[in-house]
Length: 392
Ligand SMILES: Cc1cc2nc3c(=O)[nH]c(=O)nc-3n(C[C@H](O)[C@H](O)[C@H](O)COP(=O)(O)OP(=O)(O)OC[C@H]3O[C@@H](n4cnc5c(N)ncnc54)[C@H](O)[C@@H]3O)c2cc1C
Image (cartoon, rainbow, N blue to C red):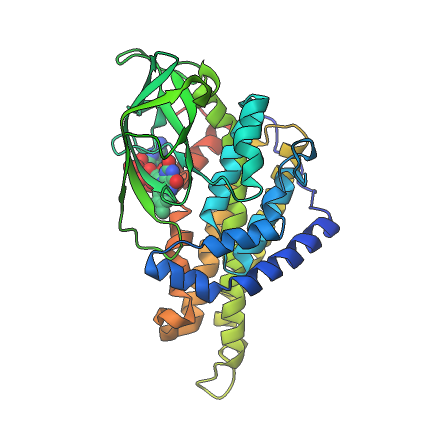
C-alpha cells in the first residue's frame, strides 16, 4: 500500500511573509498593475518591474547565503511569487529564472553558479526555459533538438516553441537530446541540460501571437548549428532529463503560488464589486448565490495554500516533496480558476470591460491548467505514484 501524503502543517514564518509582503508593496508602488497591463497590451517588456524586484532584494530570496543570497529556500521564493501575484504582478520570468537557477545550484559547478546564479540577484542575468517542441509537446522524451559533441563543445540544432521571455532573457536553460538519432532515450540517459547564451550565432526567435495579459511574450526559438562551449553543459552528459524532473517539483510549487496569488487578487476585486453594486437597491453580495461561489473558491484556495507551503517546507528540508508539489499545483490551479470564474460572474457585463481588469485574469489562470504541465498528467502522477495504480 503506498504511503499516505505527509501531514501539511508547515507555514512560512510570519516575519518572512511580512517582510516579503512589505517589499512587494514597494514594488507595486513603483510598478502598479495598471502599468503591467499596459505593457502586456503593448507587447512590451516590464524592465522596471524587474529592477524594482532587484532593488527590493526579492531576487536574492531563495539563493543560499553562501552564494551571497538572502536564503529563505523555496518557501521564501514561493512567498515572493504569491505576494507578487496577489497584487496582480506575477512575473513569469521570475518563475523561469528561479527554476533555472535551482537546476544550476543543484547540478552546476561552483563556476557555473558564480557565472549564472549570482548575477540573477542583481538583474544582470535573466534565464528563460526551453523544453517544449512543436511535435513532442507534453512528451519531452520525444524531443528532437540535439546537441552533438563538436571540438571542445557541442553543436546544437533544432527548435523549441512557446518559449516565454526569450527576448528579455540573456540565457536559455535548454533540454536537448545528446544521444545520436535513433538511440533509445530514458530518464537517465541520452539528454543534456545546457545554459545557452541567446546571443550565440545561429539562434533566431519568432514571436507568437498569444492571447494573454502578461509582459512576457512567447517565441519559437530556432537553433541552427549553434556552437556552445563544453561548460554550457550543466552536470553530466546524459542526465539532463533526470535533472529536469528533480527540479520540476520546485516549479509545481511556484506555479501554485502564482495561481493562488492571482486567484486571491480576483476574489478581492469580486468582493469589492459585490459590496457596492446594488441594481436591486441592496448589494449583490448579500445574495447567497453570489456569496457561495466566492466563499467556496476562498476555502479551496486556503486548502491548496496549506499543501503548497507544506510542499515547500518539505522540499527545503531535503525531501523530494513530489506528492505534495503535484497536489498543490493541481488544487491551486483549479481553485484559482474557480475564483476567477466566480469573479467574472460577480462582475456581470463589467467583467468584460478591459479597464475592470477581470476577464484579463482569465487567460493566465486558464493556461496554468495546461502549462507548464497539464492537470491530466498531474492526476496521472497522483494515481500512479500516490495511489499505486498501474502506469497508464
Ligand atoms: C503562455 C504559455 C507559456 C509557455 N511557456 C513555456 C516556456 O517558457 N518554456 C517551455 O518549454 N514551454 C512553455 N510553454 C509550453 C507548455 O509547457 C505546453 O503548452 C504544455 O506543456 C503542453 O504541451 P502542448 O501545448 O504541446 O500540449 P499537448 O502535449 O499537445 O497536449 C494537449 C492536451 O492533451 C492532454 N494531454 C497531453 N498529454 C496527456 C497525458 N499524458 N495524459 C492525459 N492527457 C494529456 C492535455 O489536456 C493537454 O492540454 C508555454 C505555453 C504557453 C501557452
